[in-house]
Length: 229
Image 1: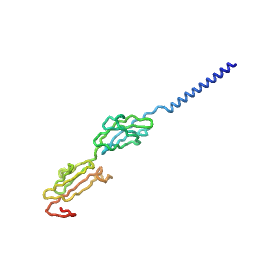
Image 2: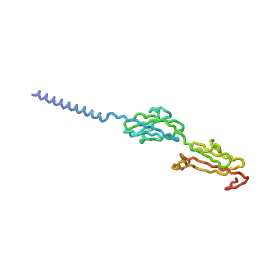
Image 3: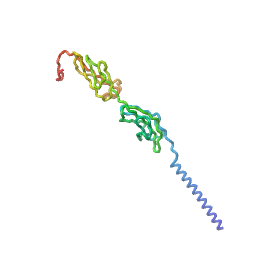
């Protein structure tokens, strides 16, 4: 009888131990599933485009589902990789203006999608070259004579329109023909697109037209504003 009781207690202990091991294994499986499950890879942004401006490039792309931020990798010239490029991090919109660039230099970009866990592959590389904004200067001579410019470009009446990089200071000089004298400057800003809101200085669609007036010189001396002419 004693042996039977001992055997029964032993069997019961073995059953409880076995059940405990089963729960332990299940618990470990649950922890592993919750903490280390597979991560769905993020798609790289597509439709990446660049728009070059004066000293800047705007990069745009399509939004990616599951992304919380985007990173941009860029370098001068093609061949962007993570290792050889500069990273612009944590962009939360689908466009970025990269300023402070050198006009005439090619810049190349690749965009990645990112979240708290991972980062996508690089997008297709795109490149752009910023270009200085040009402004047109036109001269119309009234009378007989020549108007020239420094920097060169204007030699009116033969060549009366020239484009210059925005911000360039252009000096105009008059050379009246024999029997003619310089009288005054006239002109101002012209706006080919009337709905353009830029009306301070030379806007994107503005150019300046100058009208030097050259009058016949009859040998008379006139005083205007205290200046002998």
